[in-house]
Length: 121
Image (cartoon, rainbow, N blue to C red; front, top):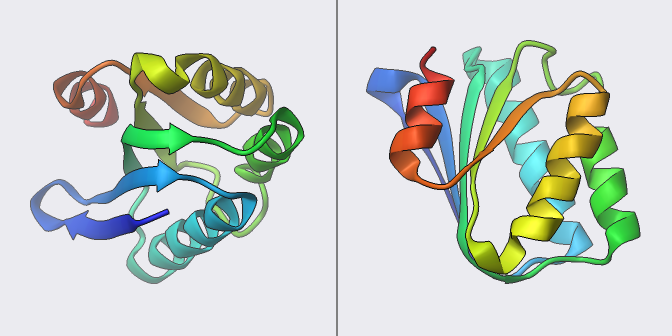
């Protein structure tokens, strides 16, 4: 999966733009990247654009990924806004529910504006 990670300095947001087929390794690497930036820079807002993703791993790996968003490496106060398309909305909803059940502050959004509005509240 090609992924672009950048920091929107003026908003203190980590922005991840993902595309193509996502593997379980890609999910792991994304979590490691977010964890590192959060720890080094103290940034607590993450915007993930998944609108160009073509496929995700199976349900078991999505479940494990959702649970791992609460691991000690990722600070408890991090907010995740995920921009989703209809193509992966069922999988994204699953990730959102599992993560929220573990007290991860995560929300799926239909647009960048909606995601930014929620992150900046």
